[in-house]
Length: 161
Image (cartoon, rainbow, N blue to C red; front, side):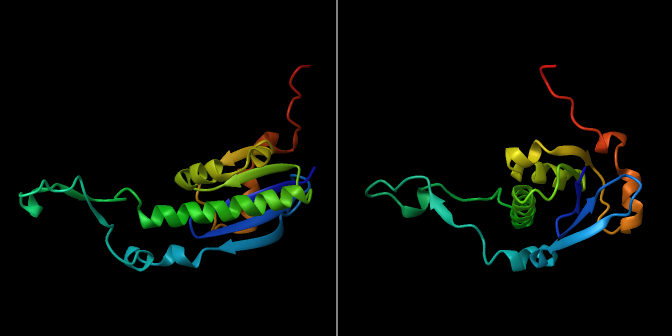
């Protein structure tokens, strides 16, 4: 059974394949997001735009109208992390369509793991055997297999039996 292992954080993702639990991991590819290392000021060119609540009534002062900024909740770092999660999910879906793996294990910090899960197509999520909520992207490949759950290579039970 071929297992694809993705070890990721907000700036890089390593993809490995594994045939058996006691075999070494086979490195497949790496994705990097150079923008993840930029400062917020470099990710975003200026402040959010301003909007007026309503037009001023005729004969009243223009400044008496309430105004506020738009899009304040769009943190540039979160937006960039979501874009990178989309790239990883697309790479996983492409490999799934090419039958490169039968099971999937994702290792990522908890916050980024949630972003990845949200971006994965349903067909990829169906192959998800395990999630490891740890930041392991800088660990050597040889040490990653110790984090694999015991049931990684056992097939999912078929429902309806």
